[in-house]
Image 1 (cartoon, rainbow, N blue to C red):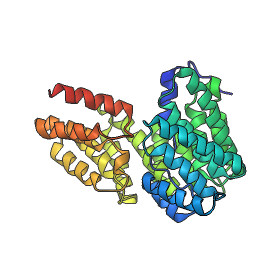
Image 2: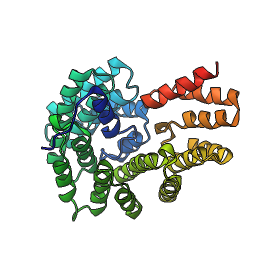
Image 3: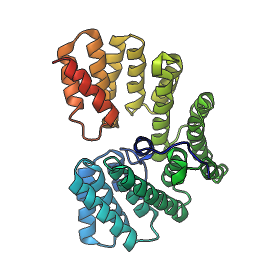
Length: 338
């Protein structure tokens, strides 16, 4: 097992943000209706559908899992809903011990709990997440969602809590021949962890177009992670631009490509172009996963439009599932306008 230098609450929080199932839940349900609602973050509708199906058939595995996911994800700041989601996920696992989807929604609920947990509780939660994801992979070796989330856990978790680059590599090797594109995406994360930026970029750009929702979601997430590195401190904005242009070309219906291009143009001082791309991103799928209004506010503030910047920051701060780092930055910017 690989040993990591230190273990802190900050490290666990970083893991929770980096390795959660994400806001968009990828493809975890076999039922297309449940899957489309989860992928579109329509958790209120997902809850209604799950309740209706459970009323008709209390043993409906996917409805049980869907209810747990909806309860956990609609508003992670609502402690009562999160607790209800935990109970539902536990019930799903107990009633359907051979169903990988129950383990997946259990892991998601535990990830949500980590966002508000203290260090010692977070340590216990992390161990339970690893247990749930490991079991999900055992039950369904073809589940890319389970495999990629377990890979992230091994990469980002402290070594004293089970982090292991070797185990992450084993997960990639196991599907290299049977699921080559999924394996390629796992190699992207391995390269990102090792700070082999060029290798990660090559693997990302080599990904073949896919209809697999899980693969598409992870491609978006990995692109944002790598491009953020390229944008930091103005390192290599041209490389970030290439990544986002590729993402926009491969996934034109999603907000991530235009959002990323807006970031690039904002960082390079091309504010009118930045505003144009941010506005485009707001109308596309998965826009609610991104801090668009935060970045829009920054661009407007840089242009000197304080009134519109204030409105954008206020809209962003009403977002329920925003990244805490973005929330803190937006609050500071808003406070500077008072």
